[in-house]
Image (cartoon, rainbow, N blue to C red):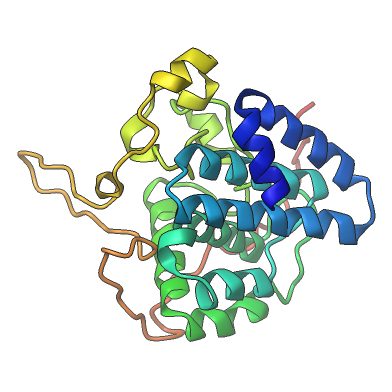
Length: 261
């Protein structure tokens, strides 16, 4: 992890390309190598969060998404336990949100490959054990339902290189800054990490955390649901399993379904 941190410290502009090369290399290496790199990225993100290095947090979680996509991985119960049971919310809030989205996608049954039929059984005990995970999952599924989005095809591994998405793009992937520290500040504008190095130097990367948790003041009433991964947000424990929303049911095969070329 500290080797990655040193690389970022001395060559920030080239660090993302370095991670891309590492992902390409470890994806073809033995599983032990790719898992080691996985935990290096996770610990790098947590280290960056602990020391308020927002740019490094964002680069690390982007690389983690890309690694999971390249290796065709699902989030494991052990990883969920690590995030919700062994680490604090302040340093893992964005990893928690992304991992929860991955769990919802796995339980719903993504189209990339057949999902384990026992995925629901694997995560049900954790939903009961960790109230933060329970509430985060409920909130994520509620947002999907509100946006009329299908959990089976909205893949948290897919990061669309834009924040202003068309309707069809919203169905399959996530905004470029969905899990970034500046998510609330950027909105639908361009991700600051996509700017030139000069623009990055002038961009205020240390966005105050309060931006993520203070409801927008509007002339009309808006019901604002805060993420349980935010330390300042109140946590609600849901009675399990009756009150836990389930993702969409598995799709029935269409007789005339065609694969887009």
